[in-house]
Length: 304
Image (cartoon, rainbow, N blue to C red; front, side):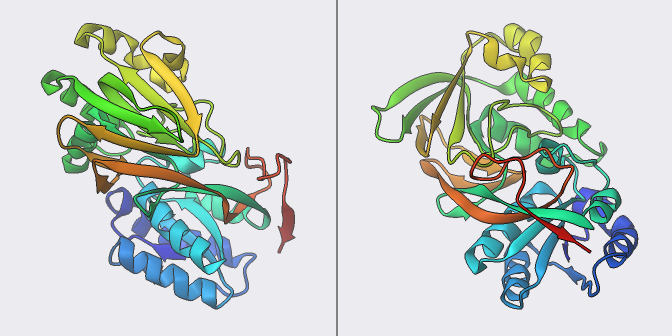
């Protein structure tokens, strides 16, 4: 179990003993490996995978993405335990926000293959986005008074006042580049980000495609009025949002932005995002809402 002790402002560390105990109820050998950072987490995961161990990531979505890259490279198996602030990847699987419950439910787990996207070679699990979202993430990462997923809603409202539209150039697969003047460009492997915002409701972990969401310019008042729809995914039904699909997308803009994915800055524009179909072996409870890479409802079942 690779754990980020500071995830969720110490939440992962506080729950570590209980999570380890829940895993030990069915796993004969549970080892805990605290990480000093994302690079170190990848090293720990690669070493464990080489030993034939299942790697469980206990922390935020950023830790899970970094560990996923190392596990996929080593041909290992990953389980994700929600120990961070947003826990959006686990939310998209329909699992509880309590790592103790997920750890216990892994006693009856199945392995499935999912896609693994990358921003300029750096892997992530959920959604990579840029523009207004970049400003939001900077504010969220600096926030100290708020806890949990509500920090993202706070940051979105804070960023609104200073935002000015950007001009993006977006190229999907081999199509002609398109220009967007607006708020955000996002490339999604999973539906959720921002602590429960259903940014890409049609995203599928195992379809071999990215769901590319373009949010065009609106007034601040209109944006504010439409903002609540992102929690249900109904924002994609408005004329201000366009959804594309492809295996890769190249994004540039008329001013500097960092591309954030799963809460961490992974690259600066211009950047390319690609998806590696079926690249990751994922271990999930049988209750998880996920299909395997062949479109089936289940993978192989593992019992204690």
